[in-house]
Length: 112
Image 1 (cartoon, helix red, strand yellow):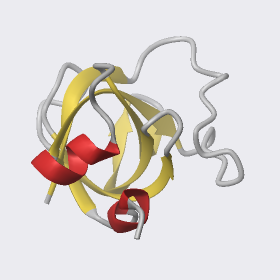
Image 2: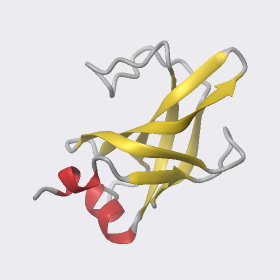
Image 3: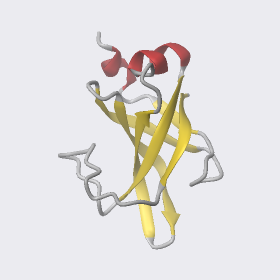
Image 4: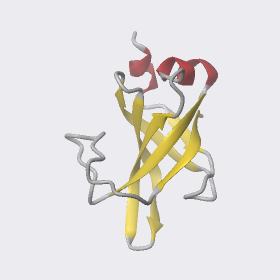
């Protein structure tokens, strides 16, 4: 079975960072194996300003990091972008073409 299939549905924690000062829990819902990017559905919506975030997209920071790294070590250093609920599209879950700044940080995604 592919590693990506083993990771879908797994609970993860996004460690505290410059955007949120407490760990954020969620579940991996989508994986793009070509870019090693994961979409995380947050367990509890995050409200910041006028925005409600229910999703986060995590992309590895280093070229050597991929889904094998996450699977074997349980930790993946990432750039995280939180996606407002009004912007998330289940038919294109990795789409960040609308993003122009804000709601992003460097952090780690940790398997629970």
